[in-house]
Length: 253
Image (tube, rainbow, N blue to C red):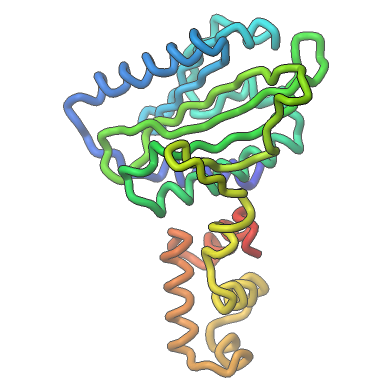
């Protein structure tokens, strides 16, 4: 499995979901939103519920062009693999990495601001003739009742128009409220760790212990421990191994 997908899978499914009385109503609302997108935009809409680990697929007109099974509308997975397996391998790897960084970003901001962001990718995907065509993929997380947890994700697959003026970047995160554009491996992500924290994390990645790091950098071991805790807090991890994996997928190492 792709490393970024594996990390994202772990992060999404490890969330704690609170029991709420209107969970069924919330799911129905999100399903209605997904259905409306598929109908209005003729796109493929995939609603994933991380609590029940189930997805609902709404096949708009694009599904027929791609030759997808339009009857397979409910799957016991948070991943729409029938569709994902058609995506060009390089595009798929980039998509997973962007989505992991998108999740990390949303977990670092106020809950009320999460609905203002979406991640957009340009993907090559095989149609029913076996030829690659381009689609625009968008992912946004829908507001749920679970406090800090992110329960619902909505993925939208639209065909790109065959015209030179219709194009999108390879992968960006955008704030739809402010029109801010965040390049997934620059700007906010690149500045997430200080230069010293990156240096220490790089030494950890190569197997150095805290005492060795302190000696090499001519700092106290308490300073190293403080940097380690800051790194864990910023990356929202609980171990050095996880910190290294997360930092690599965010382009920080």
